[in-house]
Length: 239
Figure 1 (tube, rainbow, N blue to C red):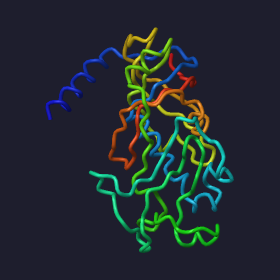
Figure 2: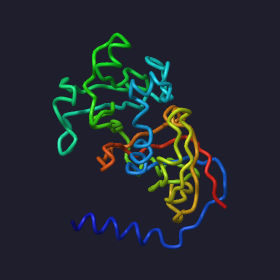
Figure 3: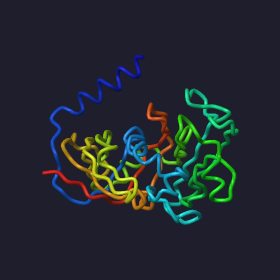
Figure 4: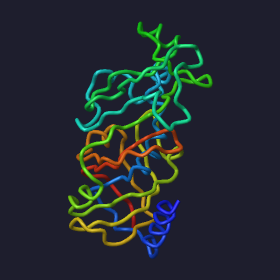
């Protein structure tokens, strides 16, 4: 409790006097919670049902390179301390650990019995509440620390919070535009708090442009576990 309380208080004090930065393309570091929020808006793109209905940007990309070598995203139905973890889905199919993206390559979609029959594969055990979804979506941690990523930035934005993910993200095109807040970084140092900015991009392009992945993966109430990441360049709109 003390650790969480101190973190909340420190973040609140550090955000005092936050203001926008000039519009430009910046190096961007997403905190683990900010990335999880963004990922939550794109969870459905892995659904084979969405793919077959042409409502997923991953249609036709199976076994293609869609991200950096640093990107591995899994569905882990046996994750400890997750209320979602389970051994069977709603169709009675056994769940299993699966790599959705391995070293940047899309390996599988998530199937129910119907979509699996259409594609000539086996169900992956991912039917819950009538829809096809991951049990516990997780991007694997990397080798860097958050401090390493910030110190590696010449000029950039460390984004700690994004808002409007579900309204500002398009699962078909992969485009997103989200209000964000965080800190302006110059020469590897945190200079000042930033607010009232908009970060925009494309989900696939962002995955390809990831240059560092931190070792701080965190589980969130979105059902997504994510680490902090560094993206080499993204457009940021501010003042």
